[in-house]
Image 1: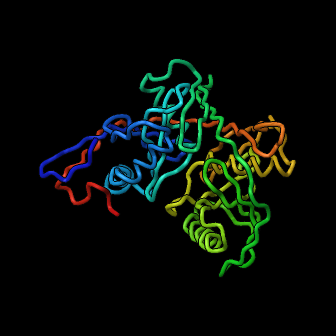
Image 2 (image 1 turned 90 degrees about the horizontal axis):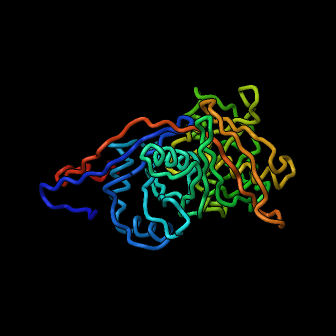
Image 3 (image 1 turned 120 degrees about the vertical axis):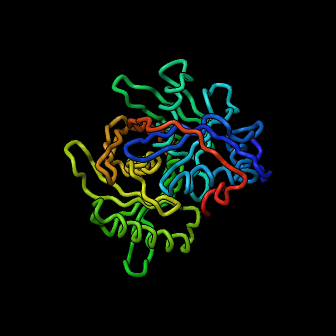
Length: 318
């Protein structure tokens, strides 16, 4: 698809929406721009450079919202993969998205595009595998995850001394250890401001690539191990426990010896929904883990988005 300003031109993009543990995903299944060949990472660059208006129009108001994560199906370069996918949100692009990948696999199942209960998906952060489970959940073996800095201390105006770890789980996270926060849905706006303040100070303290902040609290339900609150790049919060954020958490637990390979970890999100997780070491060096994140996605709608060239907000409200 070529984005055009020709008078009277209407373009259409077919999407399927789902939510995973409360967090929405909008998958572009038809009408997407032609990104050519190459790896999904290469195609993401072309998407960003030539078709960013499509990203904005699909996930931003008036067709979308700030919380919505978009996913565009594309051709994988890896011949072993069943599909490729590019993730994006209201402010840019994501290397990987855990809840979004679960939503993508549920969408591929809905479309009848999976030949078995297992599949490989190429993302901009690497190839991930997924499995459809008998109980309706989907398990994702995420990209290799690891911690790069432990007990990073920063001084945050209005908060004081903040200590946390920096880790990769498909996106970059600052996992706050102290001070502790009262995680409750009624305090979402305060938590967004709190985490946003931390991120601003962290970015200016030598870590400009960290765009997610993860706060933790005690679990609210029996069988869970932790509750989190995750601030996303566009200042919205993740309604789910965040697949890439949970992967980063597992990497820290593994390196600290607080969680053994194959040992179950249940991570609650701010809504009380949960992901069940385990990990294995990537290799004998034990420097990186392969996390497995399990959750359930539900299809919520199927739509054809219309982009009228005369519409002043065809590219979303910027």
